Length: 257
Length: 276
Image 1: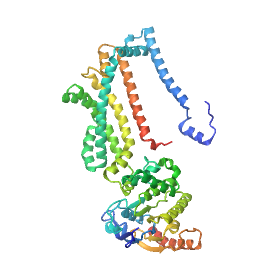
Image 2: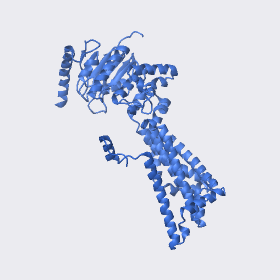
Image 3: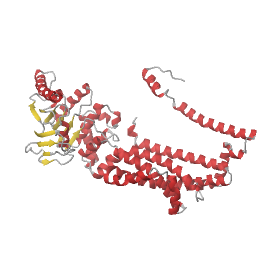
Image 4: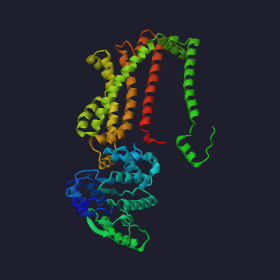
């Protein structure tokens, strides 16, 4: 790996107004994400956190400001920025294997290499036995595991996750958090993760960024100084939860006023 | 009935959809219905003869229809007519399908194409295709080109429209996912847009096959020397009702087979929708 020269993701004065004359959705966000760092973005619903992620992904253009990945300005979606969606977004006509090797196939990787890649990432998410199934045959949790494997198999520089576990039941959600944390200990990807679950953010993040209500901007950043393997019931963990909850609640209250 | 509703899930299933039949039982009912229809037809035809209700030439029994078909087959004529109709349908439908799918894919994806093509098609579409047949004859004459062109014209619309729908209703999240995995241009088209639109395209093809058999008959009424439609019209001229009914039965069987064929392709190609 080449040593990182500066932050992996640079979000510089990024603002977004959807139609002129209307209030901005996002107001001047500045945020850097270091290589191998997992940053969670938290905020009240409608604060523009998903808008921010879509701008980093290249699906939306910022009204002002710019996003840089490895120093290059983002102008549209590209394979260097893998995305995991809340809706899984698996290709229903492809099997699990077909989905995972979608990126490598586009790059015309040789079959043997593709097979190794698929095996490796399906092992990582524990779905080797389901390689030949279609998405319609999988549960929500399994679908999201495939989506994560698909993103990893394309070997992106950064991974963007937009409330990836938001559609799952509480039990499955925690299981997937455990797995993502485990994967991150192996893969050390640079991940920008949007969530509205404070617990999820404290469990996964190196840093938690709390955003203000609309128009969204960075309100406060919490570096999480907890061991890599985290215990949701440790006093330090709940302390972080309480501190962040207090800050988030201020913003939720503003929306209600 | 063999099965007794023994648990909640079969009870719910039965309540929502009626009792599930075994394959054999379902088949027996289907064959039985056809047999009952033939029996009723035979009885009516027999009654007409026995009670001298009207000239039995108007309602020949099924055995006479079958006899007429066997006769035509023995003389080698049936195959000529069958082949003529099938050839027209194959070329006409094939061309209509190719045009409908190609233009539909373009219009579905590219807004400028859509805005140019759609208003024209929306204006032409409500005109019943049959109303255009005399025009086709005036323009390209009475021969093969007008018959084939007419099928192409008629089948184009449903195929075009379902293809546009298929492309337009692709989940935007799938397109985003594909782009962020590196798909662009041709790769995006062949690997995502085409397979995602395929179920709708196949529905259009099924509608198109049915329509092709629908319109070929009428165009074979006019100025044809072969074809199943010609057989019907020829039968009318010479009062050969068994021949008319025989040709109609063959047309019915062809339409049924055509539909079954597309369904078979459908089941193979879009197995992912209902994997087992």
